[in-house]
Image (cartoon, rainbow, N blue to C red; front, side):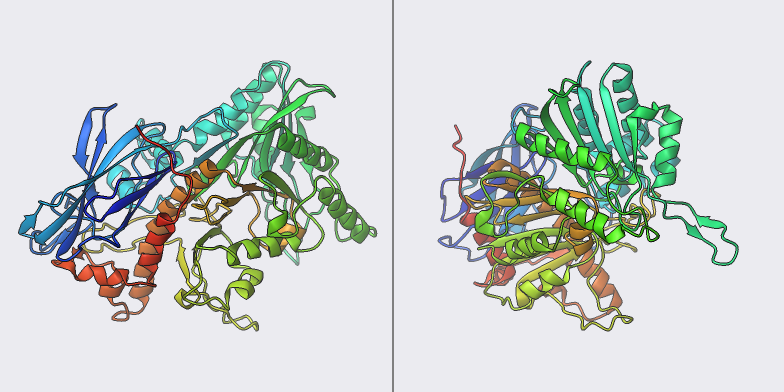
Length: 603
């Protein structure tokens, strides 16, 4: 939801709420900011009878000259020196009032006479009866919070109940939502499932229980034979993945044979879907009602480690399209391998069949209001080109998460952008750097193109008051992708016409033309856009700080902390305002909020 305050003292607060997240911006164009030290921020929660000042991350050196990881301060004395702020500790479906107090003067003699600017907000319900519910896991095992709570220890190394508390913290509500989606199917209903990784015991247990309760459950799993053999002996040196572990779980849980369908064709590609369709009834007239989709693999690392999202969609038409896609894959269509003499024809036929399930847009103007599903593999890279258009054509802001690098198509589109273009935020698994073994010229996107990148990183050593951290990989939760696994794109999320793209595909050519994938294009749904936008903020700026520190650690003396804003200390005067000059990144971020549409009315 979107809110704005009254204008007080020339300041006006804008707020966007998700389920657990609230993002703020302060319009200061008509305010007297001379001698402004920043803002103390107070949060009031009447439901829990709480009233306190939010905790701060930086301190005045005059007050705390040697901060360390035990230092704990609030914004009452150590204000936020920013016109953009986020609260990631809110609870779903909760009304809050925030008061922003402009502080002036000196660190040891703060002037608190300026009137506060109040703003009332309400967060979104976690589980609603609306068309969309969206569930993000924490996705930040590399964090100060995990260090404080669990000492950077693997969940399996913790004693109960601490182990379960760690898993719950990492999953947030993603685990619960998955199980709740399965639990809605009653006796006589149908669940059609399609999973790349099927290695998460609690979900397998829930699906087996559904079968025992007379729910018709049919599960397509990736069973591609892609083992690696010794070139001389022929001995298997690496088992097929995820086939081996998928089949082990199926056997361990005792699934009946007719519940499991092996996706073995197209062995060079992956069955990368992670969706379920709930149908009322179990015959030919069974009614498709809802879809679970998103980026979350059914594995410990998918749910508790890397960043992931689950999307619950209550839309019979879209559920019908997913059912039709499932039925197509259930026949295991496509080439049977490199020795298949009819391989090219079968692959082409698969792409034609998938592309024929529903009409997909060719241009942005073709995207209708509502939800459009996109299934893969499909002929050509038209959808990838469309995603690039969405990134490049935003009026004020585009955001994207990329687990496996930046597509050439995206770079070609954004390379000619300038500092006067819209903001584009890229959240990556790894830093986009030149590859010494590549013969293709490296194209960098950076602030000159108005593109800002963050990537999976963690504090390897203590830094001022920040403690040494760990990562999902070091916790044993993930192997290949430790940080960023979500796949979503936002185009002008705070406008009256936001577009959200979300699903399983990695915004790459293989995910468009080769792999089994699904995506949703959601246009005009402000609530959905707000949830994705605030969660993107949470993830991007968590890792942005760490990414900058990683670069600076490789180049001692290169980083100017006065420009990056990542000093441990607040400035003792109003010189921090220089970061908000017209045309700067920080000023543009404020303007994104100040121009947003669709405000809620508050009592």
